[in-house]
Each structure stands twice: as structure tokens, then as C-alpha cells.
Image (cartoon, rainbow, N blue to C red):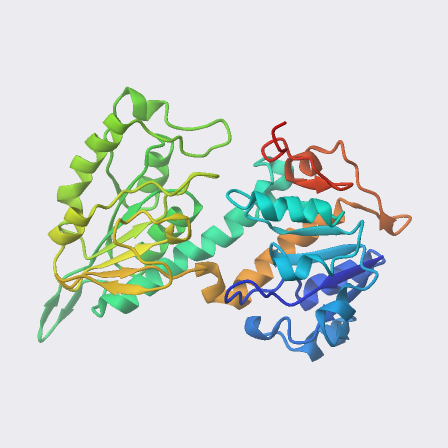
Length: 379
């Protein structure tokens, strides 16, 4: 049972799908691990580290993929990589299929079984496999660090002989995993923190972390959460009321961090150009949703934009990848926990149970066809 780990080729991806720790665990399950040369360098893992853990280093992707039963990736294989995937192999990674249906079709035509880790159901059994949470947690932390770096001033209140430095005011918009970690990090750094979200359950979580909650708490707000724990898309009327409430609040903030994303949809616009214009020079917006169109109207993907009134809008792509070593450590554990369920430990061989709820939720393609109900081509 050969497991291949080719180097990432999409964008400036710095993460890697296995660490020496998970290499050892896979070998314990009877697998042979082949890692492409240099695959872990951006995450601080040398080829020698993998070899010491028992992996074989391949000189290129073609050599790594040869005869592989399982292919582990961070991002979906690029079009140029798909042709090299072994027919019948399981390909596991973050597939980002929404809006990329042609890529899903290409995976099906390559006759691989592709699994989208981001579709892992939010159930107790699958918590250790939840890549969205592990990566969003680090993105929320990094957003505060990036915001503080761009702000250029101290965050905590400091009373010195030369005068008092006021505490920075930080506003977190969207209180999922990333938002909660952003709140906790900003509080640890001494800022005055407020936060908002459309889901009523988040109010208690925000307050438990020492931040103040801000939202229009009407009847729609009380129903604004899906069974899976995600935010629902709110009506135009609610969005207008919420925008009115937050507009005056944003004008007084030093750093605003937006984290609002709805799976499969463009990011909701939370900060208008007018709101940005109301902010004082030197204030900062960090938009964590920029890869899906952004929560801030003026955010630019991959850039730190500076407005005419001196507001910095941070639009870094792949924020978890800005903490590559830690992100890879957690992501590799998520992958191992899932792949372990696909292996018969006594026979030390692949044994996929296609009726398992985890498999049903994540499987995109099988036997040359797209099988996930959200992506099956309409007749």
C-alpha cells in the first residue's frame, strides 16, 4: 500500500500533507510513504527528516506517484498534475470544488476517487479530521498578528512616565472558529475587543472570551444558524439593519478583522467603501474572506491596499500558509485520522467502506464519475 505525497504546485502553497510524525504512523499501518523531493521545505521539514521517519524521497512527482494507492495533497491537483495520477488511486485533500466543477470532472475522468476534506461532517467522531477548523483557528490567530504588524502601534494600554498609551480597539466580524481565535488572541495582546455574528449561539461564546457582542437581535437573528452550525445567508433587510449598526462602530475601531464565509457562496459584503472612508488614518482591516471575493468592498486579493484616507486593507491569500509549519502539523494529523478509517489494520490494506457517513460526505468522484450529490452533472 503505497502513499504518495507530491509537492504542492498551486499558487504559493507552503503547507505539506504529511509530517515525520504522520509518516511514522502511516508506516505503522503497513504503508510505504513516498515524498517528492523538497515537498516539506516551505514548512520547515527537510527531506532528511522524512527519511529519518521512514519515508522514501522521490526525485520528482512522476516518480512519487508511480503505483500509489493513495495520494495526499493540501490543495486539489492542478490540471497539469491530474494526468499523472494513478488510475484507481484515492486522492485526499482540500478540493475547493465550488466554482471548479470542470476540475472535479477532470478528476472523475482520470478515474481516481477524490475526497474533499473540507466536506467532513461536523460530528463528534470527525472532529479530529476537521481541516476547516484546524486551519481557520490558525488563520484567526495570524489575522490579529498581521493586523497588529500593519497597525504600527501598541495594542495594550500602557501607563508610562512619558504618558499613557491607550488600548487598541479591535472589532471581529464573524465568530466562527477563526473569529473566536482572533478574539482570544486580541484579548491576550491587551486590546479592547468587540465582535459580531448573525448566529445567536455566538453571543455567549464572545462574552466568555471577555469581548463585547454587537448585533441586531431580532426574530431573524434568532433563526440564523443551520443545523450544521454554519451561518445562514441573511435577508437584505437584516443586512441593512446590521450594516447601519456596525457602520458607526467601525468608524471608532483601530483594527477590524472579517471572517465571514458561507460554504459554496461568495463572501458576504460586510464593509462598504463608505465605512472604510469613515475610519481614521492608520487603522487596519484584515479580510480573511478575500479568496471568496472578500467581506470588504475595497479588499484586493494578495495585496495590502492603502486607501486615500490612510486605511490599510490586508488581503493576504492562504493565511494558514503564513504559519506553514504549524498548519502542516495540524493538517497532516487531520489527514491521517481520516485515511486511517480507510485502511484495514489487520490486513494492512485499503478497505474503503463506501457506506460510511464520512466517506459519503467527502467523496467527490469514483469509477470515472462524479458522485457527490452537490456536483453530479444535471442531465
